[in-house]
Image 1 (cartoon, one colour):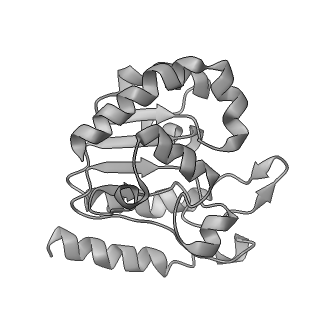
Image 2: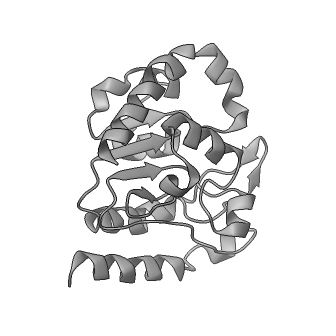
Length: 194
């Protein structure tokens, strides 16, 4: 089967997934975007309530900041032929004490390997937040700050970033090197690929 048809079937299977249905407070609504021609893959955490409601990934203030970091307009960011968006958890996991709960662990185990295998053109993977970084860079005791500070060591395939959530504004203020060094390098790499 050609990769494009394989991916179309796989995405339909993902969108029909009800594996965690009993554990999801708003029910299942898997949010994922992928194409066999995509060059950039964004691996985030899990949809928030707004994304759950609209089915559009990064359709919130975090997405506004992420698009700014990448210097991408709305249409380019959502062009599946260029950018794939595959979160660690495809459904809204629920509310925790200080924000949303972590992504459900089943999603990545069930789907990530198969989705990545169906996207042969991916050259850059943006790992947004700790969960994505642990999955793709390995579990270590280092902090997210330390890992993101070593971003060049993971290239050219991976760039780890903090989550662009407004909750991380203080982190960004305390770590100006991220927006001074990492953001321009991400922009340049994304622009070159697109």
